[in-house]
Length: 374
Image 1 (cartoon, rainbow, N blue to C red):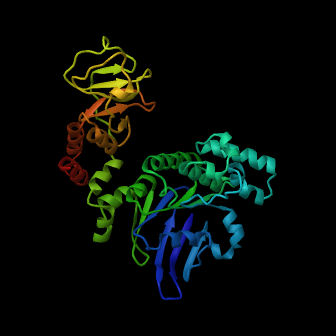
Image 2: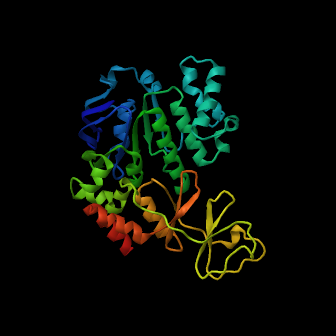
Image 3: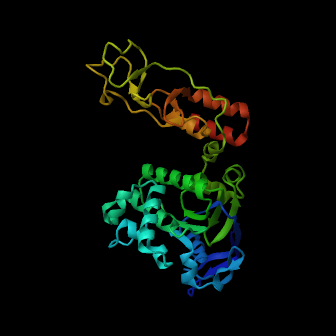
């Protein structure tokens, strides 16, 4: 558990980065600090590992003030992930991950073997361990950074905008990987971001900071969206907070319907005559795209004859994903898959909006109306 007790950070020039802030980060949870640039998020984070010393107040880790610990010893027991991964360019990936265990006295052989296992845990192959950071993509480097932070099995993980330097697709994958790892490892994670969607997706609790380092609200994401504490919080989480609230509503009751399908590799004789869109599947029945109305299949059906589909909705996932699938589809029908990516049917925007209306939640209805207008 991490506790901030009326901490304040004021610099010599009079600038106040954090102003008498108190909050508790429960053990084994992900807590996200979010707010505009310059609101003290990173300053607060770095107080935990004593990279920044508070001007007043106290920071406690499992009931003990961090200032009572030697900084170097304290940091070896806290994982730390930053925006650009911060890898040593002259060391291999494997040796980067093994850095902290070696400092603790672990043998080089065991540290390297454990590093390879950690690379697999964060979704990388052992073979990448032989490469240098400059030979990896940005997303791979960030995964290595996470692996290195986990190498000493620290109970606390500090993450300072770790995914902000990669593209949206890679970022979504890294976020999902973090959620998977957290479910498996149960670390106490303090995560800094300026992205509200990232905060809502990752955080079990979210602390919104305003300019001047003041805590504006500290709440679970659903509560934050439904009941912002003041105009600043309401403005910061966005006018589309109703749409974001759909992330916390399950999609039970949303029944996928049928649609005409074909398979990649089918010949023109296999493709039925049609006036509407046809969904193309691969040999494992996973969606690959849409065949437009009245299009002619010459020879065998290939992916370059298809129109890209929208996002997919996985059974059991929240309503926000379902609505996005329907809205992003070129056909107006969202494609539904199971956990293995196998096609299950299609849904419409109307189905999703009807389900929202039937549940009669004011915040959800606000989001649905906004989406229908957009």
